[in-house]
Length: 566
Image (tube, rainbow, N blue to C red; front, top):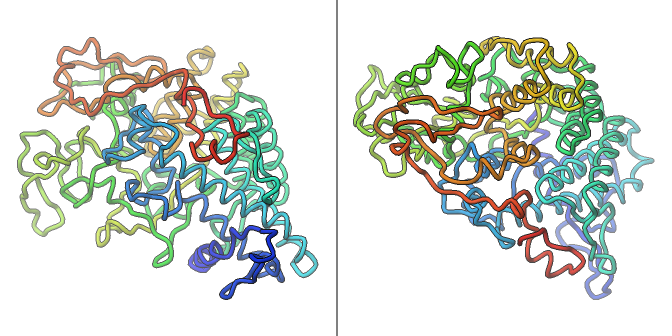
């Protein structure tokens, strides 16, 4: 059933993107497909067009514009490499964003802009032309299709707003005469996004039959609305939208945190929206970029030492405060989500003993029977993880026969995020009631995690600290961190200076100090100098809270004003 939807999605994308031209000598019907003049004749064509929109949620750029440096990953799995908790080893334009050395010609920011506006153009085409088939389309399907289209368009604008600030607001198919559009301010874009998502939520169903699994739902529209409102400090709107998702009664937390990032979690009741994959039609290049070298992986998208040190001990205290923390056994007595998110030295990873201590020259391979000793590539290979850690999320042994062709779904929205949006919005609005504690503690008390409750009666400052750290513990490697450090105005602190990896031949002699945002300070650690400096980053606070508008856009449309500093 899912294969049918995915196949339609891919086929549909080739049929859109047709732009009108008013020159008679170019006004010719295509020889091999429909033209914009004769497309939309029946219900099936409308459905095919809408299905094609979902592909735009996937890639950061079109394949022809990707120099191959991004490993064919969905954007959501790339973004943390531009934040304080992740690193991109490839000498790519993604790496330049992380180091603060990007400019207006950056191919990643340009690719995101270009791809998102292409999808917006396809949405506009559908909305401008769907009336042609309204009379011959099932009314419920027509309404749903309009809801899906408005949802995808709003999703694109919400992402653009978070990355670039104010952007050109284009809501109809452009012609040559009106092709130049100035940027609208952030407030205008946000108002449009929230209103569009309200319309989408009203038209979309709460659930689908199995044949339509993966489509946008009422819950997806409300979740993105809550996210957009939270990112722009509209606390009441964010809390109300999150509560509306909670009140649907459709979603619940999965009983297993690691299952969410495996094939087994494909149909989890926690997943609200996910990218759909199916052999041989659509795949992504996982888990190759995340895998250890022993398993044949690249280890080129990796987490930081500071992320590892941010996770609490099982008593709910940070490692600089907890009596349970032992610097010589740093991964014991820790929040279980640390080991579910990050492949830690001493653990089993893809059926190999994962050990990144540089003197660990041999390790165990448990893929053989009996287990065998092999040369430890995660210690001796020049391109083994530079931080000494790998991402564990989205690594599943079911991909062992082809580590470059995964069909695991990739989550774009899940119920835990909704609960944390609600908790943060209520905290910032200073509405410190029981429902706030219920939301954040439900995430912490998930079976298999079972972290202590945030105690009732906490101050607003303490709750702010708790929810900010909880977002890092729960959502790392899911594409949220860049936006969080921007909106909390801490990026100019956490993105400056060394990106640290582990001590190559030992452990930290003492815990670093962990601040209210969960950020590690290593200045007082006795053997700080032994830590691996993976790279040294810069961050210009007057510039880098926004991405640059692509240079080509400001040159072809003089009405578009560049962001400051670029």
